[in-house]
Length: 211
Image: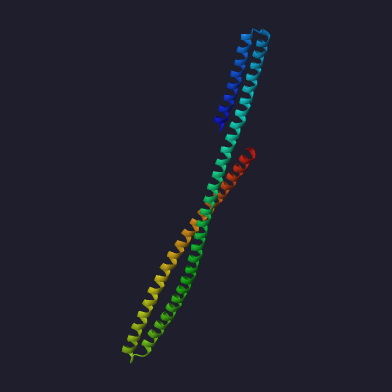
């Protein structure tokens, strides 16, 4: 648009120049030196005026075009920042949901671990009682040994269950720590993205006001 406007201005100046030359030729043919001098002065004034107007219009068009381009770039940057912000917010929401789920799993597994420990304590108390009974009742040694063996198997089973629960609790705790760390990083990233969005919209607004 700027180059087209400059072309139009140039054509107008050329027309004015040709008209001035035509007037000058006519006056020369008539031999009127006074009119010739006047036409030359008029031609010079017209050319100076056309050049001034062309310069002013070109400056205005160039400034407007630059301001418009800067405003468009600022708008694009603001839109990109807004899209990035939405993406970061979605990541944070997903991580927070995973944390809540992990905390719920940890709570359930802690409850199961407590039950396993209670079961182990009960089994150990039963084993101690069986051992005491074994000492007292020598006559029923075989039966007591069988009962003791069964109780010992229950104790081993309870210990295995407790060990498995401890491993699950440890694994879940590590996963929860990892998720919290990722969530903290995501929150920091979200904070930076929000700051970038505010700066981008401020630049876009300033660019529009200058346009």
